[in-house]
Length: 152
Image 1: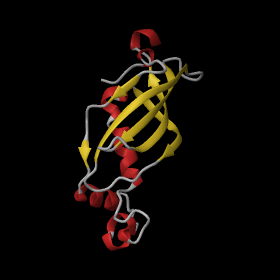
Image 2 (image 1 turned 90 degrees about the horizontal axis):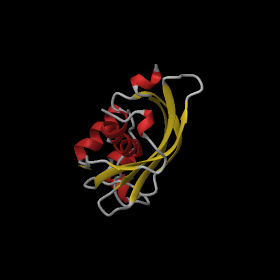
Image 3 (image 1 turned 180 degrees about the horizontal axis):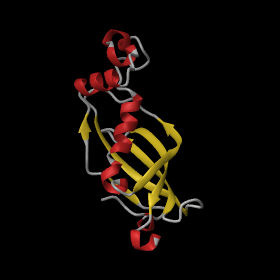
Image 4 (image 1 turned 180 degrees about the vertical axis):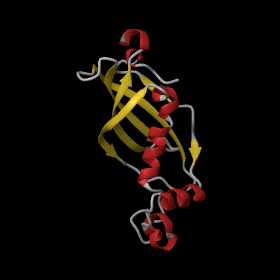
């Protein structure tokens, strides 16, 4: 179960337990499923001629992992809705064979003006590779459930 609105306070950092080494199959499946046929993700020869010197994994895969592993810890069953992302950055590329991990920091919490049973929470999700280089920073704003007893 995720955290209720009342359990989240600015400054809390959650280091998520799930890690993943990105495989060629992950990259291929994600690009196929997302209809992203950018040769930078699929064509090694094209990648060799790029500024990266090789293929790189889709930044949307990186975002999906970085945010996705936060669900079990923070939002599973308690997120009413994802209101959006304030910013998303990819400071370093992810390559096939990189092992990713993620952490989330609660940035801001406030009661919802529209929904008395909920609060608005801003979280910053940060993804890292095995060299501790930041590969993704995403600020997400979510509508989080209050504890059922407190919402009544």
